[in-house]
Length: 424
Ligand SMILES: Cc1cc2nc3c(=O)[nH]c(=O)nc-3n(C[C@H](O)[C@H](O)[C@H](O)COP(=O)(O)OP(=O)(O)OC[C@H]3O[C@@H](n4cnc5c(N)ncnc54)[C@H](O)[C@@H]3O)c2cc1C
Image (tube, rainbow, N blue to C red; front, side, top):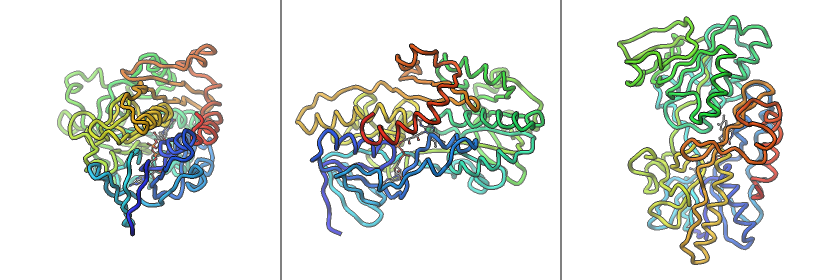
């Protein structure tokens, strides 16, 4: 296959890739833009939490990739296997060699079940579910739950949409109350985190939600193994919590547990929902684009404000794959994309003064029940960054029905009709 060249090459045509391509084409309709992505479908993943609670139709979360490629942009339906930023070239699974002037890296996240022993044998089968991998199956199991211990948990790796593991729990709680089996069940949230949410204003509301719903929480617990035959999830308790058991618990309940030594605990479950372990895709982790050390090790090493690669000036990254100290969400992509596009335009025009315009904005629409939502918006340093316009109308750190309507109807509409068209 003959080598091809594109001025602007985008790896991944998910939330970030399509948004960037659309914005580039709006800024310069003649720009030579190409995307590489093997996927036939493009998914609106934020609605998967609602699918898992029977409140949204899965079919409405996906559209054919072809229908979303901006006019005039080229799409290679192929997977990148290697990026060589020194040679400015990309190799693909089907044997393509593509050269670029500028590269935008946004292939999202890899779900890596091998990081928790036993998980690959049980996930999406029997009683282990995840809205990350099969939201329809999750709903089937939640709908048919007959009581017992319902364990909601998450891996100790970074995960996309850190709020999703608790959102589905609040919805399940609400559903089980409606059908009258909540009093025959104990809900336990087990997390490696030290608090329920990093931003104090939203944390205060969520703590009230946990107490109102009578949900037990275990903090400082890292999931290491799932024993599907015995239905036990094994955790290692973080060192700083062993000496101080009081900080590990909120709303303690008598649940079936096993202990090995002082730092291993097995929690028995009848139903387990989890956010599986997640990493950067392999071809990124092993490339020169990944951070070699530090907290962002393995993720693409970009400047936190301009999103330019720290060593390769013609490379940018955004979305889940970017090594940024903020939550990995589609909402973050919405604020990152204009910065990347502006900076690409400046570089193309021969300018070197890049716009340090990204402040770490991310957002988590924390659904706390059917018809209830807290809109958590924040920026670097876990500082609240609520939209000033919406804040004039209501305190978004509290639960609101209008925010639920935003989540269920407003945000998907905005996504398909504005964001992916480069207009929002
Ligand atoms: C259950 C769940 C709930 C969520 N809830 C919310 C929410 O409420 N709000 C919110 O803002 N965000 C939410 N998110 C997160 C949001 O969906 C992601 O942060 C967002 O999609 C990231 O965009 P991205 O472009 O980086 O990755 P993606 O949108 O995942 O796209 C990555 C693309 O890269 C492609 N790709 C992968 N490998 C290769 C390769 N080798 N070569 C080429 N292409 C490749 C994939 O096929 C895919 O199309 C949620 C996610 C999940 C799973």
